[in-house]
Length: 227
Picture 1 (tube, rainbow, N blue to C red):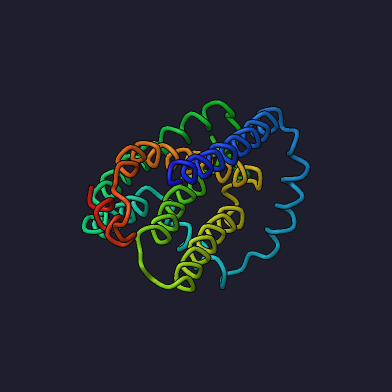
Picture 2 (cartoon, rainbow, N blue to C red):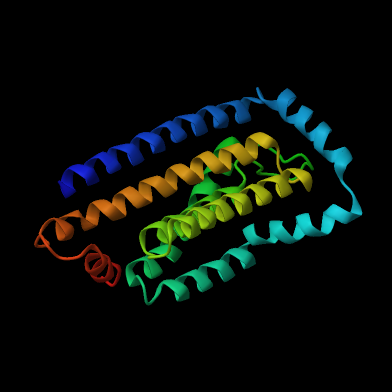
């Protein structure tokens, strides 16, 4: 029964990840050939008149989360917080985040599309890609590792999504990315996240499959989180 449930879950993760990768490839081709430029320019023309001294500060502040210094701080805090409940994820977190750096480098090199401000390498947005992975891991672990009430977990996942959305908006607002750059970062980052979760769960299936029946779920979660 456990194997069947995990198999269905794995199929869902791989299926959604595949759809996201196909979407990303379509965006990448359009970005390289500038097919989406009229749409991107329309969004930019709508957003830029909204800029003001009141919004500039908050937008720059939230955007800092996706900068290398901000990401390093988030990774250190995340790994430290995970060390007791799950040492496996405490180690995996920086490794997976290092993978996002390689992904965005390859994606930017392949598309080679300038940013709205004419700076190089705009597609995909590295800020959105990295934070989609980081905040996705945080949301996943809040759901699977914590024993908090459902309301807390739902609100925590919503907060992660809202923060990612705020960073995405800030990148467009600050004229650092086109909308398609942001969508490319989100689709590639989320696909990478789902595949990473699928692989991690796949590697733990044999251990879970041999656990004797009758052991409380809380005990299983506690043992598994410390492996």
